[in-house]
Length: 614
Image: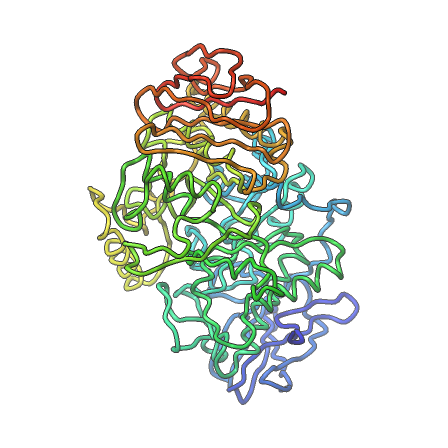
């Protein structure tokens, strides 16, 4: 494991600020302090192209830039704050000054994560970290145990999903900057909720990206869909790796973040002997030992490759968990009937039963969409290593019109889909607003200043939709209207149907948290059966007693089925029916208990949940 090198502006009250920057090809580097009387401090060259200097009078709030070879004046690549945006000077931050109140916080065990993904700019009217804080009691009331924040690294303008960030260490100024994020994390911990932060280590955005002025941060050995690949394995890659290792550790150490979601790790290219992700996990383990608490890495990947989460002694990278797109694609294709784009080859009853116990649909099978054999077996990986969802920022926002599932399926089917996700053996994740059927879309939006870049983004979006059969005109991602349309209405307090849906989500989450069989579900003790004729998924959890039997009618017609036989003797007692009027359902009277093998008739688009009684 490599030895880490401090970078950026590191303030110590007794000494001042040490500035360190990697610029291997520069002949002269100074730090310019933007004070009433500007001051330039020369940096000394050290090994491997690092430059460093102590500026005793650079205090928190001092803005600064680096001057390279007396020509280029640039913000700090490792800036912790860009108060005036991506093109202006960086600011010295004192992380020791924040008054944390979470000293007793020990985190939430991964198997207890019930995740709520949110975008800071559209989650509240304020569009800030403080706006999120105001609504945390509502999320706690819902039963959420972890919020996942879309990227907050400084991006150009005030409107962006966050994946165009260009200062990975700097917290977005329009959201509330470093202290705003700390207040949010502190407040979450006070509510008993963990915080997952989405970080992007596969590319940087195009506007305000000054890294190439400093050194070979990028490589032309590989291509990503979003721009130049980051240099993790080419010449001069050690300091680049150090840059991103330090970034991950910063979020854990200075912001008390509990977990990082690593965006699109399939676009992190590294053919070195030790993959970047493995070494990152090693550094995180080391920090865990120092801090005596757990830090979690969760990968987003479209490769169905368990090497990401296999232990290092099994040849893996040792990450804690990964997202499972197959789960989403199966349920989405089944309930919407969509078969275009990456939904090709998804949507059968057999597949839905398979993902409940085998995790991936494509685990070494031929994929028609990819035109190749795809994926690996997850048979030896526990369920808690996979995050599942029916909606997320990508799956909603990368639709041309940003429609949520509430626009694509009826009210009763929304409840069915909620049950499939929350009562699966995996870690469930909700996308903000889905719990009450938010009607506003979640669109793609940016606020670039370069006209050519703006047009390129518009054209790129149109091309992206070409493989789908979506009708209409794509909204302009640069428009403020696209951003405003994407804000949550939080309208369930004044809409009876939305309140019914939210209460049903709340009941499902409570069931997940209170039933012993869901504490740490064992995939090998989950029985799943479904056929294309019935369109009813039988899902039986037998990890711990009392067992739970879930019946999901994923069709628009009533279905009559027989309960599966299990080895244990006893009866099945009714726990929950989505058709109940309490949840805004049509009203349907089920028997209070059933024998194994009994006949059960399910209304269209409904869930029946039973508990075993010996």
